[in-house]
Length: 378
Image: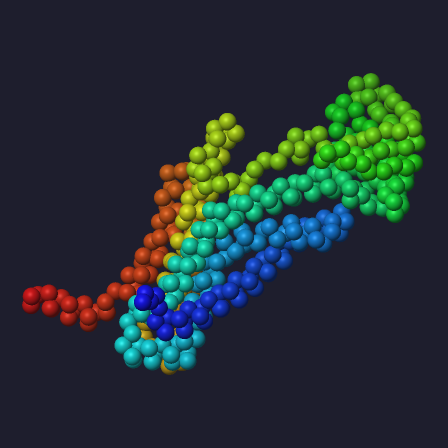
């Protein structure tokens, strides 16, 4: 019968690590989601966006949060659980039973490898898909649906060139006291007044059907005011600005293949560095889960035992984590300007883990002396 290489001790520690990891990750994701979603509250307060649409929009940001904080929460959880094991003297008992540093570190490393694999799934598939849906949904709300969210007694900016005011709105959707300030024509600015009207849709383009009103335009060439009265008129409530009418894809929603092999016809030369750095960041960021796990293990499993605990090693590990995160941002910024520095992204993700593994699993000085003597005698 095939058995998994998990001992009872491994399962005991992994169970504690996994439970804490889920709890800490969910709590931090909820906190980050709350702070980041505040910038969309304006759509609910001023534009009348429903709570359901608000939740659907902001929930698409969650996979990106998870991918970023998973390596950090893995460090926090490994640090906390192993410190608790040390405080309860469980690590002391395990060492007295003859367990090596590798045996003690194996459950945390298993968790780090699983988190690394999960981060690859998020970085390469889930996050780009969710960010593409998020930006498409956000574009639709701000450039099309927002026109249907006109509020009574409020000047609603549909775009930088279009402002709409509605005095009152009936339950059947009829609008009263309508003012439209339209600056979309470069040579003339129009002010449209109407007694009543109603919103209609033509595909994805929202329109307002105006009744019993007037259209006032100032010809900027001649300075002449032109006034036109009408019984019915239709005004498109969509910007003609190309930047607002066209959605440009962000690097966060591109696939790895698109980042590594950008389309020359749609990619500016100055953006090549940004695309390449984003591609290598997606490939290296999951590796930091193992590096951060090893850093936490070094702070807990190395050094002399203290009956009253040792606050300096965990504090040093936290400082090292902050320094590595800052270094990663700095290296990415430099590599964006000079693509020859991209190998530093890989070095920043891998070398700290290698150094921590060497510090954790190297033979102690006495063992090294014994091994050297045995080799000399042979």
